[in-house]
Length: 281
Ligand SMILES: Nc1nc2c(ncn2[C@@H]2O[C@H](COP(=O)(O)OP(=O)(O)OP(=O)(O)O)[C@@H](O)[C@H]2O)c(=O)[nH]1
Ligand SMILES: [Mg+2]
Image (tube, rainbow, N blue to C red; front, side, top):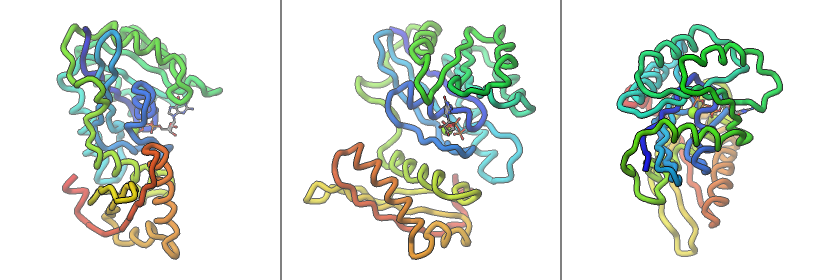
């Protein structure tokens, strides 16, 4: 069989996490229209007749930005490029190639492993920079246009990934889809709702920790989660008037979880301030 680690790398917002979910066929990684949504390396395992591909989703590489977290996220993404078997460089043809994109492109050229240029968002009507990205083809084994959102051309991408993977062992047992522990995944799901519901800078100062998961007698799943913000003035924004905002976050996460588990879920959310969580991240 063939196997290996395939890293999804690129700027923020190009659709790396959407693509990971699409490749694995289930929602492992959270997504949002805001940049810098992903914060962790998340492995998604594709068990396939040709072998096993372990895809690694990364935080978007981001230049500039004034959040303390930005540098750490870019560092995490770059660390993911060590000891890997293949790179999927994900780009968005509606975005101009600027300094940031060129930095990533030049960084990838220095890495000696098979690289596939994945031009995502092929479903968009306007892709003014498509030809500019296609011009890079000589430095890639293959250039493939896909839509992670509409799941277009994914089979071709998977075949191409396996074409360039080495012969190797299974890294994960049959059936295991990710390395992400359930508590981390639940925390990510709540963080996604915060990214989707709250405006501007609030999500960037926020993290989530799951404190308890228990099954109650009536089969209800009880989840206690702490939303932690580094900004004391964000606490009230997260809670909202009469707790409205927190309710909305909770309801949105609970609805999704109930669909997944096919059980009732009791989600107990609390908000607290910890001005130092980013330093510890
Ligand atoms: N139209 C279209 N939108 C897409 C596609 N793939 C992703 N998106 C959207 O692009 C936005 C960003 O997607 P993400 O998957 O969160 O992007 P990311 O690259 O993981 O972003 P970071 O984690 O911030 O680096 C979301 O609103 C997605 O729905 C696609 O194929 N077509
Ligand atoms: Mg992401």
